[in-house]
Image (cartoon, rainbow, N blue to C red; front, top):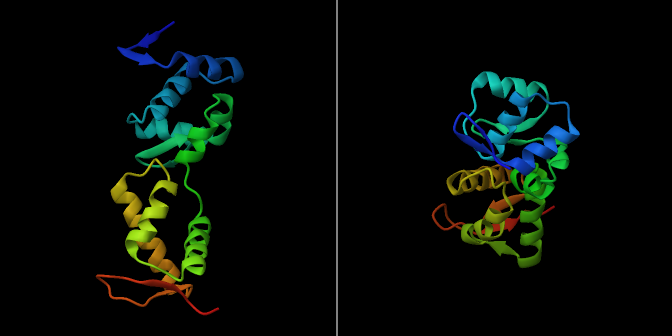
Length: 158
């Protein structure tokens, strides 16, 4: 069975799951299908879905909320696209430095890139890592024993 509306093909399994297990309007279901497919949404639609707590994230990287992911049986995809808090990534960097003593930027990029949200592109992921390292340095958790061009991150003394 294919559901086609305005020339768009809607994911039938996703739509059936949402229709069976929720009291969402057809408009909300179609909007959630657009979120799942990473298609653009109007500002009004975004406000409506956020008010109903059906989506999370920031423009343009929206994803369905945990409750919708559970209903639609897309929990694994939800975990891959949601953003973990920075404390999680900070702990990963600290654990790495405690285990190996030091890390260059390539090392840190290598083990963090695939752990960051799939909602981010590579450029955004690299920027997030830069911001994370800067924040950790300012908080006194790590320091750069190398140069700006060739950093050598180390764990600061406790």
